[in-house]
Length: 130
Image (cartoon, rainbow, N blue to C red; front, side):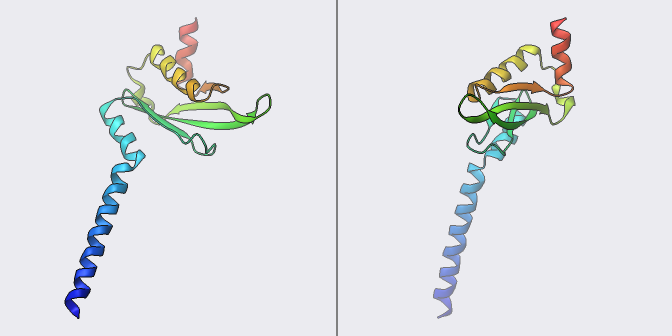
């Protein structure tokens, strides 16, 4: 009676390990961290959830954007997005062209949104317009 019970427990343990491995591989935050290390572009967002912030990475810098709902003509949509860098030291080497590329990617997802960059990113735009 004891041997079949151990077999069932081993099967349950193997199934639980397989489930945990699949959840780990599918985790979007793991993909985000991997792209930060590789210095590639990755955009993580839940468009249906306005309370979740946008996370994206570009050239090894992790950015976060806060979304705010507002009224457009007939619908409530995301109208304001405030973008900041998690670690301002990671901004080294990022140009205004890179920031314009990121802004285009955000506008593709949220066409009615006004994007505002927080300090120290907003200072690069004031220098580039002078």
